[in-house]
Image 1 (cartoon, rainbow, N blue to C red):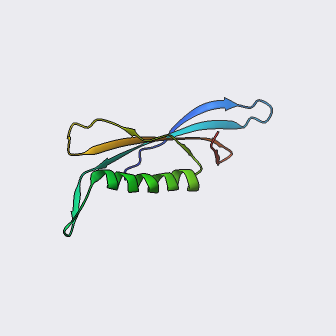
Image 2 (cartoon, rainbow, N blue to C red):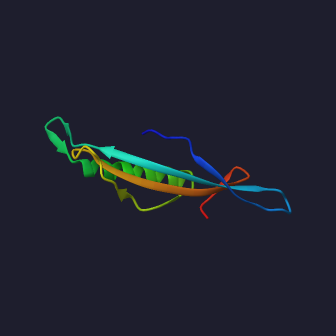
Image 3 (cartoon, rainbow, N blue to C red):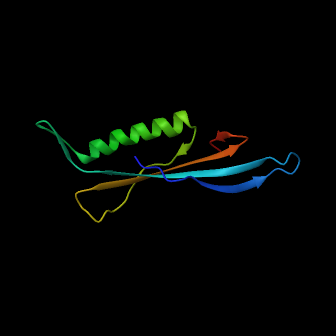
Length: 99
């Protein structure tokens, strides 16, 4: 997996305490091709499904981000499947909130 730097956008500021809230978004792109392990072939959709489960587990359960449904994206190489998942959260006082 390759992670880019998160996009942090100033969302709003509460005037009474001067605390800032930041909106954080991650766009995770998953690419997969059919693989052979020994004599067994593994389909690219199976690989993408397993990677999706791991990514949702990390971002939703560990980091507390809210994840959207994965979207299939076209790829120039038809042998490669590509999906994108967007995760969002708000950070305030170094705590990540889903909403």
